[in-house]
Image 1: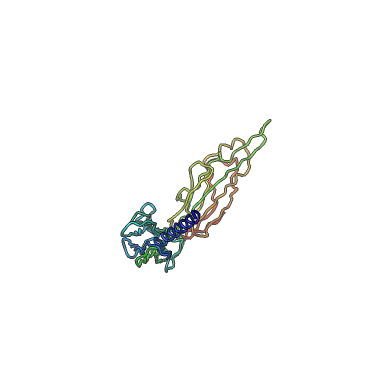
Image 2: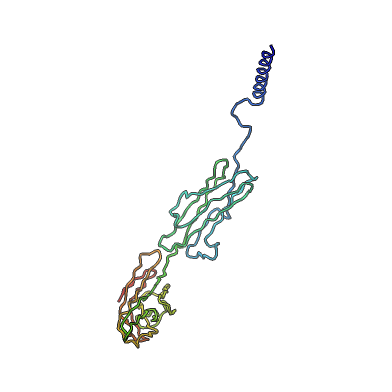
Length: 290
């Protein structure tokens, strides 16, 4: 009889336990947490911009950078992330950059910059219109930012690099002697066809000289090697000293190199050797080795 009573009590206890759980949870699957999308507002100092590409100064962000700010009314427990896409225009990612805006959890404001590049190639006037997008759980005000890139900058800088690195070993009595070509000092100079000095394309005493030309009047010019110093003439060796001149113009197909062999280990200091002509026509250059 006692066992029967214990069994009845156990069943009643289990029944009470399940009844209690059912009273506290209706098993509807619905959450009591309510969420409404939070509005993100975007703004910039102007509704549209025109960037003068030729006046872009890398040391002055105001000449190429546009700030976009995002705000929300109250801090949220998650990040709000705003991204951008180009909605229209003929510019592309080579012409500008724009990052995401992140309003961090617990914050109410974030920003990013649109930066326009000084590309240097021939493009003409370009445009792009940025459209904003926001992650789920947020909404965004209608935001479009039209940007015009005007006064196309065209690179007219022709870069030169001249080197004569190498060495020569010869018998010198009972021993051999090795001459380092870099002990010779060439300066690289530019002259008019009338023989007037224009500028240096390298005169540092280094074994590789670098320089550039830009903004010259149209016409023909001579690239000249000036053998400034040669301490090797006492050896009376006539081994050729090859001098390689390389040139390039960023954003253009103008590029190449050539090697001049007019100088040797016995060429005296002060010797001038014209190695190429450069024809200038605006921002277009033609280099012709001699």
